[in-house]
Amino acid sequence: MSLKDTLRSDVTTALKARDELVTTSLRSVISAVQTAEKSGKTAVEFDDAAVLQVIQKQVKQRRESSQKYTDGGQHERAARELAEAAVLESYLPTPLDDQELNALVASVLDGFDSPTQSDFGSIMKAVKEVADGRADGGRISKAVKAAL
Image (cartoon, rainbow, N blue to C red; front, side, top):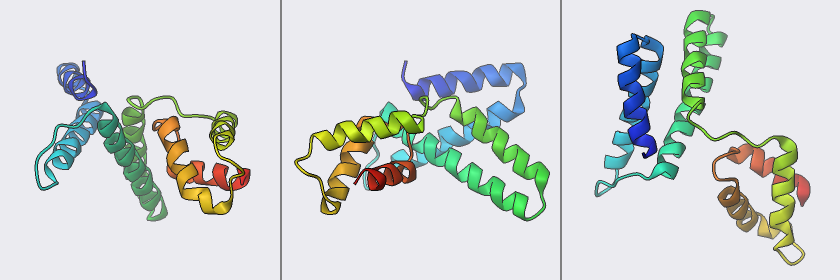
């Protein structure tokens, strides 16, 4: 069963359970996936990796919105955004901790002959590919910079 099918199935389950938070969160991410699939010149069918990227983007947006609501004194809305982010995070793979990320960066750097700062882009690409969505770009960038 693909990730999109899982999301659709879980929406049905949440509807039957009358869980408004989960229903709303999953419907919004399914809508975002459908919009992204149709946004190019031709419509495409996303695989699980592309769906995971959309979910990660949605989680990031909710965290940023929560911070803005908190700054504006709207604590209930901020809490709601964080709750929706938590629902969506349950569909993401377990994130790498700092030690695992550093070990991953070190293993990728071993594949380069005397890596320098000019190899940064190539190293970032390789680490992102191996990390497979379990660490965001900012964390990866910091780890690569520290290793170089």
